[in-house]
Image (tube, rainbow, N blue to C red):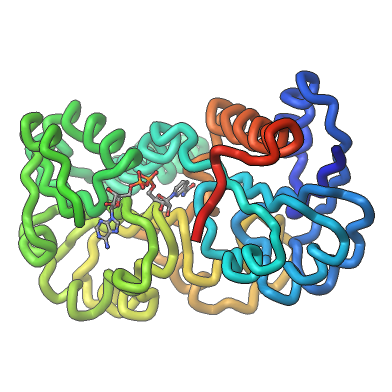
Length: 330
Ligand code: NAI
C-alpha cells in the first residue's frame, strides 16, 4: 500500500516512520499543501494523508479519483477542508482522527492563560538582561476567578478539570450540557450570562455555521471590562477586527490565540526572513497583552503518537476489511 503525505513536516516523518514498522506501508512525502497545483504528482498511491490546511475540493477529489485513490486519511480531527459530497460521489472514503490527547490542547490553553497573566515570557527576557524589577509583571490569581468555558466536550472537560484544580469557578455553555459536570460544581448558563459574568473566557467548541464570529462587537459588549479571552479552537470563532477594536478600547485585558482566521497563509511555516503582508496579525502580535501561538496546542509527543497510530490503523483497516471505523460520513 502506497500513501502520499501532504503538508509534511519533519515530525510527521518521524512519528509516522516509527509507527510504520508494524505495517510496512510505502510513504511518499510532499512538503507542499495538497491542492490543484500538485494533485497530478500522485502516481499509484491508493491513500492520500492530509492535514488541516490541505484543500480537498471537488476539483482535487476528481483528479484523486481518476488516479485511483481510495481513501483520504486526515491526520487531524476537523474535516471542514474536505468536500465530502464530492468524495462520496467519486467513491473515495474519508477518515480522520476523531480524538487525540484532549489533555494536550487543554494544557496548552492553561499555558497561554498563565503566560499572559503572570508574564513569564517577559520575565524570562528581563532577567536575562539583569533587570530584576517587577514593574509591569503584575498578574492575578486564578483562584476564585470565574472562567467561562464554551464547549464542554473532550477538550473543554480536560480544561475544566485543570481549572477546578486552581480553585476557579466554572461557568459553562454547550448545546448539550453534561450532567456529570454539574455534579462537579460546573454551572451551565446561557451564552449571555456566561459573557456577562466571566473574568476569563475559553473557547472549546467546533466551528460551525451557527457560531462563526461568536466573539464579535455585540458579544464583546456584554463582557466584563478587562476580560481575558483564550481561543485554542478555530480562528473563525473570533471576528479579529472586532477583537482589535476591543483591545484598543481596553475592553479585552488579555488575548491568547492559538488559531487565527487566516492562519493557512502563515502557520506551520518559518517566515522569519519574509515580509509578512498580513497586517492584522502584525498588529495583534505588536500588542503587549496578546499572545499568539501557531496552532501548536495539539503538539505533544503523546498526541503525535496517537495521530500516527490511529491514521495507520484506519489505512490498514481499509486494506484488510475494506472499511475503516474512523470514516467521516455525510
Ligand atoms: P468535542 O466534539 O469532544 O466537543 C465539542 C463540544 O462543543 C461538544 O460538547 C459540543 O456539544 C459542543 N458544541 C458544538 N457546537 C457548539 C456551539 N455552537 N456552542 C457551544 N458548544 C458547542 O471536540 P473536542 O475534541 O473537545 O475539540 C473541540 C475543538 O477544539 C475542535 O472542534 C477543534 O476546533 C479544536 N481543536 C484545536 C486543536 C489545536 O491544536 N489548537 C487540536 C484539536 C482540536
